[in-house]
Image (tube, rainbow, N blue to C red):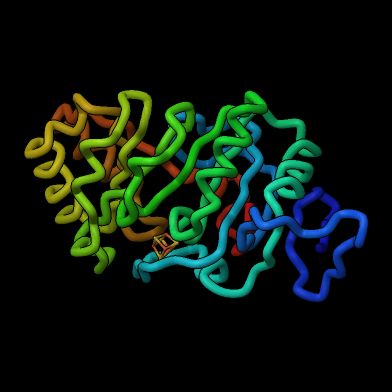
Length: 238
Ligand code: SF4
């Protein structure tokens, strides 16, 4: 496992485990664990510990975390929690890739909530969210047409959202906006939970999206990727 000066942790496949601390059966395939400023969702701006899990079942054309689709390291839940503890953050976000592809993700979330962390999971909306710990805030995507992945949305998941959860539309264009607006109306989404609209970096301008939301008086939150603004989308993981 490699740590940089900012205490970011990247698994190293050659990392040798300590015999005193053998792997248990409850492991997850982890891409990285790091501490940063939350860039998205309603907890934007909060210091947050991120657990990025490996693997994804989609291939969105704007994906900015493709490196997390492969590789990674099996790490026990116990060791993941030890690393998170070092970050001294109240917030923990489990993300990916698609974290719900791994069975032990639910166990990790349950363990973290028992330790009183404010947990959230970012999911792409294609996997069943029913069994997620009720104390975990779900931030679920509904994929828009320009992602080229919208046919994979599992809209049954809408039925299992709590009012403390969040639905996110990542928009590449005005036509994506119009599609998202029609979905919000059709499924009464703004009454179910917080709805976020986030423009794809350098595809749809925040100003344009703000103007559309204001024109329609849409009951959503404009969500900019704060980490990309802070670090000027430098291609590194933040
Ligand atoms: S769901 Fe997320 S991680 Fe997977 S391809 Fe789409 S943007 Fe990338």
